[in-house]
Image (cartoon, rainbow, N blue to C red; front, side):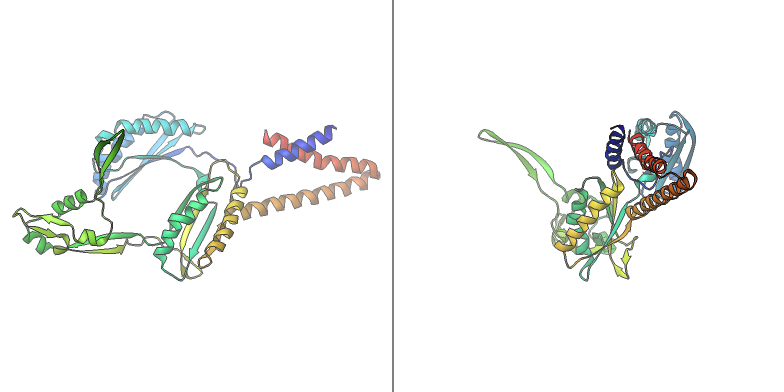
Length: 361
């Protein structure tokens, strides 16, 4: 009965154990990143990096602080003593950085405090390719396919890359701009003020209170071209009179190709503590469903960490089985008693199953 209890508990524990390629490792390093577009390395160093370094240096258990100041970017790297609780350390860093936010330039972004997490790497990478427009494929990936993966249990996020991002390009004719008595800064303010939604308060209608909104966002490129601009002389011109407005693609800094074809790359990250194999199985099943729903799109799983984990486990299982067989053979050669050999042979897998209980608890 005791052996049956051990086998039962061991089997249940084995099914509840999470399966990972590497154990969870907490690296005692945190990073503070800040962006300041247009500033040079020296301005970044004096206006941002030194102030953040001074704040971070007051955090407890700090081993050393390093920084990198480059064009438009500041990175402060804090290394803590081994054994430091990084959750509390990152929280304390955020509190210290918040105290000096007011001293940073107004145009700089909010400093972000990030922990270094080796387990935050994507577990699966999927490529999408089609014979049609890649921009349409990216819209489908962002609006539909990525959301289908994010709904799966254990999926933390889905990052998309490799496609085209649309942007409105306004090429200003400097001579016409000066001729109408305008400047680039004035034009920027006019466009910004016309492209926003504002709250208009509320209106009482019977026993109801209705919210009022002034909708001013642009719906298409033609609205931007026909945007009215009032001059100091009292005349009104259109934006198209002084600038060329077009819908274009942003400069590409990341290209994804699969089997020689342009593609969209989906990187799927799992939630901390979740079983990589189970999450990967859910994702692969969803991939098959998406293939059925969108037969014109070619989906390829180009990287799957669960395959390596499964191969490692299969290798361990085969080694355990072969080792047990050899051990039983050697025992029988020395004991010359089949009954005693079987008793010891049965105890080998039972002791292995018992170890699963200890691992789980």
